[in-house]
Amino acid sequence: MLEVSTIRRTLRIGWRYLLIGAVVSLLLTCELLFLGKKPGSAFDATFPLEIPLFAVLGSTGGLMTFTSDRMKGVFEYLLAYRVRPRNLFINGLLATAAMTGIFLVVALSVGVGLALDRGVSLTQSFWEALAYYTIPMSFAGALVTITVGMIWAAVSTPRTGINSPVGIAPIIGVGPTILVLLAAETAPSSDYYFITGGASLALILAAVAMLALSARLMSRERFLSNL
Amino acid sequence: MVRDLSSGYRGKKVLDGISFTIDEPAIYVVLGPNGAGKTTLFRTLAGVLEPYAGSIEIDGTDSRGSLANPPLQYLSHIDGFPDGLKVDEGLRFYSKVQGVSERDVERVVHLLGLEELRYKFFTELSQGQRKRVSIARIFLQERGIYLLDEPTSNLDPKLAREIRDLVLNLSKNDLVLYSSHNLFEAKEIGKYVLALKNGRVGYFGLLSDLRPKKYVIGVRATGAEGALSASAKKGDYYLQELAGPEEVPKLVQELTAKGVLIREIKEMENPLEDLFA
Image 1 (tube, rainbow over the protein chains, first blue to last red):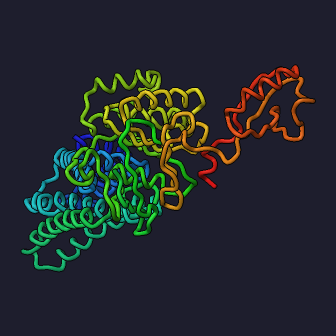
Image 2 (cartoon, rainbow over the protein chains, first blue to last red):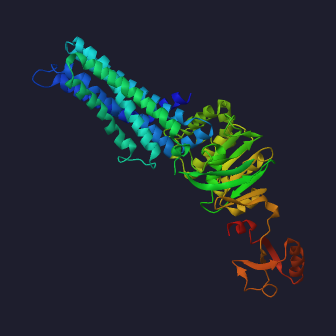
Image 3 (tube, rainbow over the protein chains, first blue to last red):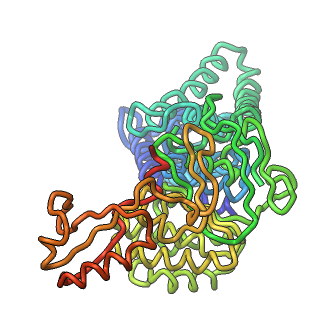
């Protein structure tokens, strides 16, 4: 119940980020499909790589909801009604995953739809890249962002603005996406998707494990609005 | 029953081994200067903070243990209203968290007179309106124990009175812990006083057992210039120090005999003030 409500509220709080992420990725898609000397020629190779970067931006609403709930004292009431700290983290994760899912549906369907409409031929490696890098890495990047952001928000003095977890975590969240890509580029081509897919899965598991550990170790006072 | 309870933040004790037992449904006013530990006490009793030591027993059961959903309602001094929701949606959110039906939301909307506010965003409301909505949450479900941290702060006198009446009604069958900085309000509604001082219990007992060090009344009257000393005057009130309330009728009689027209007599000292000394 609380999960559904958190996802709904996240959509309401974070729709602007979702929109900005989708619009910017769409602009780049248009750039790939309509501009340049050979429009559409770079789409097959570039499109799958850019999407995870914008997924982190588009899913920021999850972290915004978490920090807002802490600052507004919502967590104080939820704890009084015996909602466990673990569930507060899980709600943040699920809300972020939901936002990422919505972003991916929009960005991929519009991007691929436009490409097919323009007659761009999509190779097998394009579909493999979507399956083994774009989709898992979008979720992994977004979940790493929310994990870092939630833990950071919980252990620091509550604050908002660009110099706060909400402002900085999305920038940090882009890091793993690029690192995984770089690691895959330097590996033999046969290992490319093994590395990207495996790293995405490992990042998702690491994020979940970090949150589980944090929920166990973190005292309840970390969820209060004024310390 | 609260026994040897210590609690605080970041390992630093704010409450230091306090103990008290409550077994009568009534309003227990929690008083104390800033930093005395009132909010920490409420948070610890509500289960929001984990105590460093000691125990809290409700009906003989440790409230941290088997009570998955303890029979208490908690009102923090913070609104705690989820961002991006309208009043109606926020109340429904908390009705689900508390596991009560939507019919209870309707009841509470009428009880607190929130009809005009229910479809507004919480952020559009004034401070007083926010407080009223925040208070509505505790009436969603009857729970037997109410922990109310400054429920009437930021409210206009009329609304504060309405809230006090609702709380007084609750206290007929339920146990209410009520913190306030308004000593006159505390004196008006409280039956018991729990005064905290430096994280310890400074006084716990019946409010009626508290006596001010001095019993001073103010007399507002016309034609009192000769009968009452003008040197001890505070505003329109002539101050009179008496041995106790039992001397008031005698004073009234004397003043009336001297032709003084008494318009009002009131106590000028609040025994609760001494708890802050």
